[in-house]
Image (cartoon, rainbow, N blue to C red):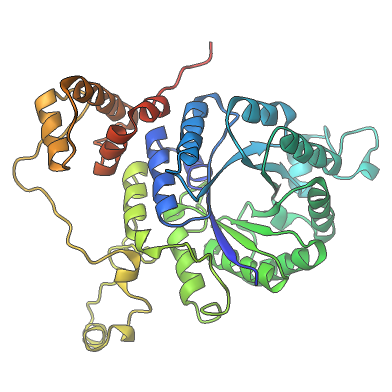
Length: 419
């Protein structure tokens, strides 16, 4: 039976959030947490972008070492030959999604007559179908193991053209077809019908990339996945931690997983990738909130401060008698419930101006020891750089990562501007 897999795009679409971003070390930590959570794939960046390359290659090396395993790390590229070639010749990339607009609005509004959608529109100009096929073949010739084809603004693209576009992608060797609801235009009923139609007529695994402009990203993602499964193919839902992403954001990672596991029409009827471990929800949501500098809304699904809070008499009484009266799922399922220690007395921290004694105190509390003074001094210097790099105090897991993989941490934090 086909399954639903999670493809998290926090490190690609999430970092495109206006006014916000992540340091490369923070992106690495998110990849590590996603792997621990059992997420199938992380779309971890832009491999053709110069400032991403050290981070990209270091994370791919972590994958080869088995540290980032079994998660797949995939890149995102526009359908341009020079950038695809650059991505595969300067990094160790094996998985990629190639993207181009397909709606009349975008092809006319963005390409300004340089390319047409089908040859019949103007035989003298390049057309999207042939260009897309060539780009898929190019990526494969350069060593791509999997190639996904993205139809940007698919939700405003007519059915007939989407089918034609998806078939051409499949014929060229694409392994998945990404239906992008780029403007959050879809509704659950519409996307279910269209995705099932694509599944049945093309027979290619389908990705759902839904934005939240109308507040429907999670609903549309889940409905689209149902359409893919009912049409006989695997579904890959694109998510972002804490809904991060352009404008109103993407489908929330935790909410999507909870919907598949708990919603009345899905529970026990649609199979979610068995590796997904919801107990990482609380940890990964808190880290993303800290890294982005965006507080988790008090009423956010599963991880908000009020997600399991009861105050009114009727609700409190009911929850105390039997939690299932007012709680659809248990907080323990999301990794919540343990007491969190907050220092209220003396606290030694490490930062860009720290000295060796304070540094040893902090690492000593984590029971991390160094073989000699030279090793401790080298790690201290990396920690100083990391604080400059992230512009905030390092978390315990970030400090552990730097101590365990100093050479890779050094590469991740190294960016050399182009001359």
